[in-house]
Length: 244
Image 1 (cartoon, rainbow, N blue to C red):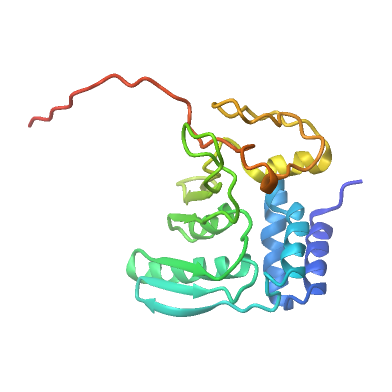
Image 2: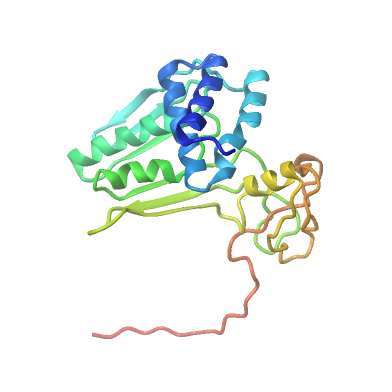
């Protein structure tokens, strides 16, 4: 029987606290992870825990991390994540940007020294709920993407998100990878032994259309994901003029 949202969120928080994360940080992180699962983004929710556990066990993620502002102006801030998971620093940074934007009209905040931060859309939605336009992006932690028309993985799946309030309904929210499919969705299919109904790379070397086992990314970098809008097209020459 599927667990309720409350139980799902509580389980996430309990695991994070057991790993040594302060309760307030665990509460925020569990909220972000469960938000992803609740909205169908299962590639960035509960399924991320094994990867986070590997970061923790290898000493690459500080579970007791506390983000802090190390440099700021009236319209900007640089946040240090203290080597922890990225959820708490990212939420902290977006709130700082929101507060500054309400005073100055626009603001930006950047985070350094932190790990994976979950679903990007969670943070832009924070801004939209405050009546602001929000944008967020991040760099990926691994190489999985071939450049346009390339044949070997050289780039990350670097995601970005945009959100804005609407006049008479829920906010508009776009949250996407810069590839034909998020890597986490392929990972989940592999973990569950399910087929991957995703399009092949246009260059023809993405051969893992079925996922009987987790994909060995680091051992087979040529099994890359294609960048979005990577189809080769013939574009006719044009001339543009402007007049009053």
